Length: 193
Image (cartoon, rainbow, N blue to C red):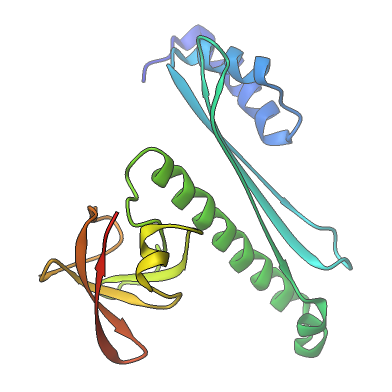
């Protein structure tokens, strides 16, 4: 994407407004027109105040610039029990827990986005961290082919159609035969549409 230098300051100001959480559709369309984009992906994350139950929310939206129509919207929320935090103790732990909760809600949001646009046919929520081989599942999208086939949270997909899988960036098309590591046991699962 190319933006004229004269418009760069205006684009930066509009993006700053977007991060503030005080954005409406017309502002997003304005940002898109300034950048010359056809569509725009926006996100917003919010965390509950200290002392309240630990709640993290993440919203993803895709808007078309010409019409301002929302093509996709996903709101994901996680709440962590405050009693766990009180037993564990420190503020540092609370911040780490907030970060992990935010990471998880973002992973679910992006999994839903990629499923909606055809790039996540299995409907899995992949753990994008770590360097191990395979695809470790943080979870499954409700009603997805992977959920219907019996995949579970923490499963690690090792092979797709008898070919090793390196990491979450490799696309998996359905139908597929999966070799999964489930708590140290190899499990064979067939996923259909």
